[in-house]
Each structure stands twice: as structure tokens, then as C-alpha cells.
Length: 145
Image (cartoon, rainbow, N blue to C red; front, side, top):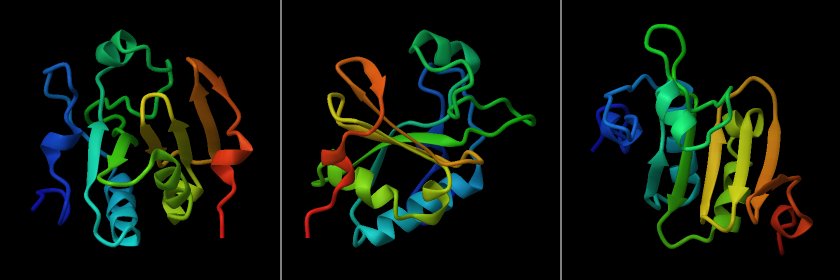
């Protein structure tokens, strides 16, 4: 049981550097709940949620990262996730079907085995392959019937 939603808690989204930063956009949590529901209740693991600006820089995050949370100014709007027993490709495809992520950001990191989702104001799609950011290759976009 979570304290943000039925399945997600504040501790999952807290900055990993130990500073305690935790201000998450409620739309992100609602989107993750919708994704979990879409996956038949399959648990979703939040690998990285909110980040303070210093931790974001330390992990090589983008200067304008959607992960950055500044209390009372900007909530964290992103999460890097995995789903237990689901491939990163299937998770990427499922995330794109959640309305708040479809209109926001979804990135696939096949080498690191996670998917990034966010609730930015415009659609964005990307992949990081061999350390380089690229457009999403067709094999990740195309669903097999």
C-alpha cells in the first residue's frame, strides 16, 4: 500500500542522494497507476523519481530534466521504471498507451533495461542506445500482432 496512491509511496520517488527532496506531480503517480492497471496489476518499480538539481547533475541528467523537483516551485514530473516480468520493449509500448504519457515523454533505455516516463507538456520519444540518444528504432515502435 502506498501513501501517494494505492500502489506508490513517497519513499519510491525520493531523491536517491539522501537529501530528502520529494515533490512529485500527482499526474505522474496517476499515470503509473493507470499503467499498472493496464499491465493487469503487474508491479512497477520506480528506479529514479524526483531528483534535486545537484543529484541530477551528478548522474548526468539533462539540465532541464523532468526528474528535477524544486520544493514549492516545480514537482518532479518523471520516473525511470521497470515492471516485474515484462521486457523493457513491452513496457515502453504499454507506457505509450497511457494518455498522460502519450501526451508527455516516453524514452526507452534497452541497455540499462528501463523506461522513462514523464508528464511534460508535449510529446517526446527517444532511445538511448550504446550511450547515445537517438530516435526510437522501428523494432521498439512496432507491435507484433
